Image (cartoon, rainbow over all chains, first blue to last red; front, side, top):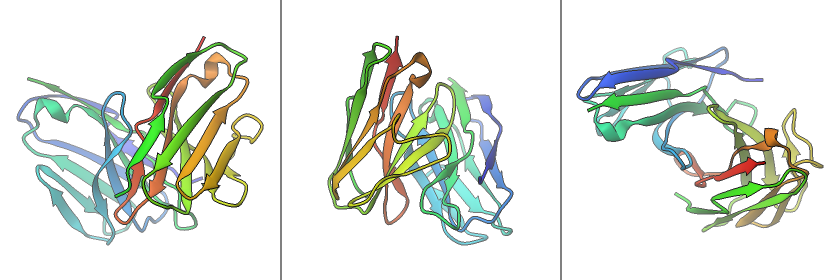
Length: 111
Length: 112
């Protein structure tokens, strides 16, 4: 089935640093979604991307839909302790409506 | 976006028993999805629940182990049957929306 390769698996950074994570796919996606999951909660949508080349921001978060439609990245600028959590990329395969998820990036921020 | 109420939020169950997880959505949706998230892992789709028809299960998941009900367009249940410690996971329901997919807060299941 469809697979999304997400990297890095984990990051431990100092508060105030910028963070970048990315996802790649072996096949084309028409939509890229970025989620954050806090402990004990379900994933919450951060940014949705619908067009190749699209660059979208949500506060300190910026995400881009790769021009080849096979990749996406998420940047977090000036990280703060509440950015701690697991970040997932996800997308619906062309032939279906359900989501395929990347393996997740666990972010830890040191105050 | 839709608001999903999922319960229970957590449970500790004896092996061999069954647990039914409920998801209530505040609006009518055609499709609901059930995911499993094993400890330290990403989310894996269990099945798609459509109202008025049988659920569609993904490879590796079967109806006898994870029976699903979808009695109307706002509600669904997932049962984890004849549980073993390997079933210890977070189970989440999800619905598609205008800007993405919304998730319930999850059910953390521990089987002892």
